[in-house]
Image (tube, rainbow, N blue to C red; front, side):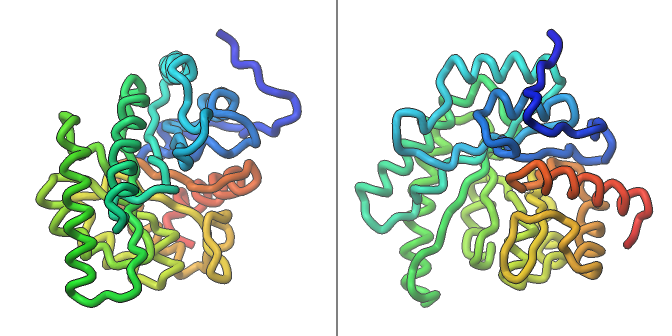
Length: 275
């Protein structure tokens, strides 16, 4: 089947499939359209697509089974894989028991819906919204998260498919839970930069558990921008990480311009090996 591209959308001009030792990926929100048009536009050029299922409320929050079936066909057509970003508008660590249970049930529902896609990872945000980092407060939050994750993993064969994403707090807060439940990590390098963590140190510590890397530019405290905006020193650190990584690298940007410029910038400096 020939790929029919909407004329109003700009297209990538070359394929990046198999270009790097890691799978190169981007989000399903590059074009202002639904999942299928985005995958049709991006599938010929990339190894993997990060399907963003950020919202859990509303009739159209989850892709229909028909959409999932079409995405499966496109994966075969384009030799493409998927990872799935689970909803971010709910929290499995919510202090309200009813909201916490709803979050768990929703995550399980989403995981069941996308199962036919055989995703490489299920990316999970576990926000920390407590007002202090005092031991009792942290322990209560950890207990809630642990209970929720045990319910979630009870219905899956491969716990490693769940990748906990780095947010604004130290990943060490969840380290024991991740290890005990045999989960994976999604290392968001942009988040680490925004919150002034030592990117290389965090990667070195958690590399063996990291299955997905989120990569995007940062400027003036704002992330999810083109890689071109990263200072040379930070991008040198990024290259050090990528040179030691063979999983999925998702350019987590949300426009064609940011994707196109990021891919070109990454390829240029990857070939040079340095800035």
